[in-house]
Image 1: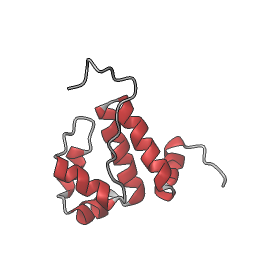
Image 2: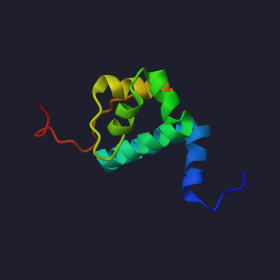
Image 3: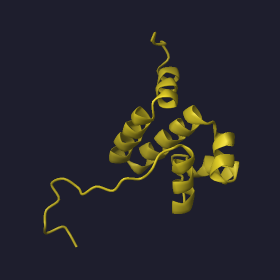
Image 4: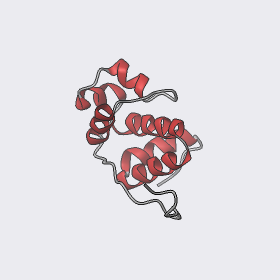
Length: 105
C-alpha cells in the first residue's frame, strides 16, 4: 500500500485497519508513560471510531471522554474498560520481567 508523507495520516490509517498494530502501539505507549498511553489511546479512538461514535458505544459523555484521554486525563477504570471494549481491545496482565523477589509483595 502506498504511504503518505504525513506521519499522522499513516499512523491513523494503520491504527484503523490493524487491531494487532493498535494493541502493540498502546502497549509500547504504556511502557513509556501514562501520558503517552493516554495520547496513544486517543489516537486509536480517533482512528477506529471517532470520539463521538466511541463515546456513544462506550456509554460515556463525549466531553468527559475527551478530558479522560487528554495528556492530563485520569479516566476511571470503568470508563477505561468501556472504551477499550468499544474499540475491540482488552487489558492483559503479565508478570514483569527482571522483577526481583525482594520487590514483590
